[in-house]
Amino acid sequence: MSAGLHKPVYGTPRTAAVFTPGHPADLDCNEDFSQLSVMIPHEELQIELENLLGHSIVKPLVFAAELDLAKGAGCTVLQTLRLIDLVSDNQPGLLQHPLAALHLEQVLMGSLLLAQPHNYSAALSSPVPSAGHRPVAQAVELLRASPEHAWTVSELAGDVNVSVRSLQEGFRRSMSTTPMAYLRELRMEQIYRDLADAEPGTVTVTQVAARWGISHFGRFAASYRRQFSEKPSDTMRRSSTSAD
Image 1 (cartoon, one colour):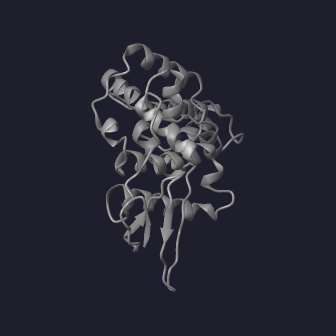
Image 2 (cartoon, one colour):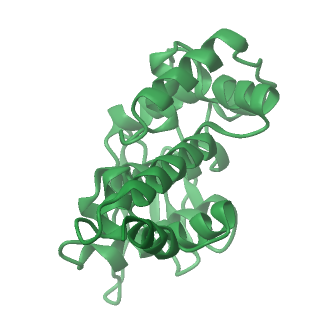
Image 3 (cartoon, one colour):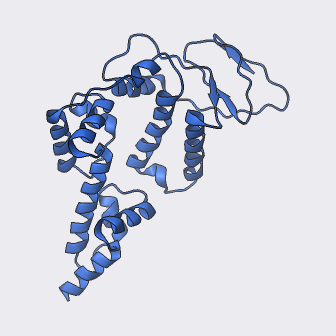
């Protein structure tokens, strides 16, 4: 059982407790007690919240104490932690890729901020204005200029001075897509060009994909085939045949 300023939370395989930085907490444990603790830097969580809101926060972020691990936000958090644990033993592995590590961090923080109740939940659930044409156009220019960069929506929104939610709404209204989906299409186009222009025997599909920020190659191959109606290796093979 853990208790602090909130009512007691009884820890089970289906229930966890969320501790708020700076608030007292007491643990009452029996001899069979075991614990898995995840610490997220308070400053990074606050920055992620401010990016979502589009403005600075005044009052400290305070979460509801009880986290349901069987559904909703808690289930997403638990699944993300299991994925991180699974790939952490692989050397080199997914976590060594900066883009993949950033995305996992954002999934973990985002699932807490968007679904676990806290004192800014009402503000996050309120209607969000679209970013408008100019910020979306600026974001598109940034993505097209550096599609290989390990972009996150938070970074992109910050660079064009709008909130994450406003930028996402702007892309939805203007382009019927999301910033990250648009980025994936850009990367696919660059990969297709590189594979089509590759000199025989000078590069592999994996090397080309990694050059443009692709970290999950199984998913990449499926997406590539959907977009171009052929496998990446077929594109490279056709290039080799043309060169002959």
